[in-house]
Image (cartoon, rainbow, N blue to C red; front, side):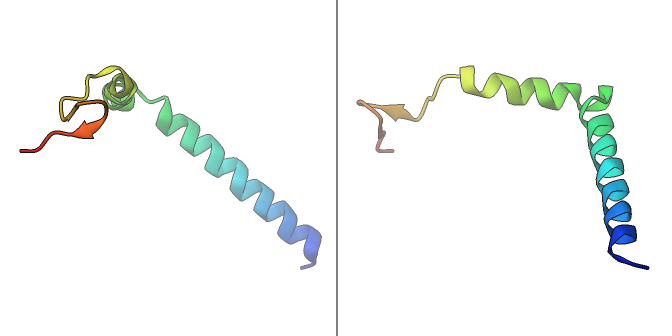
Length: 57
């Protein structure tokens, strides 16, 4: 086994990892979680007032 075999195995491993992650990210079970995460930047910050300083509670 030489360096080219190791490079080939590493390339195959990374390709399968990428495809697996892509399938996981686009699965319908994850849609609700990703939709909720996508809405986070649009939500109001209820704890910030007075020009960005935290509200004393």
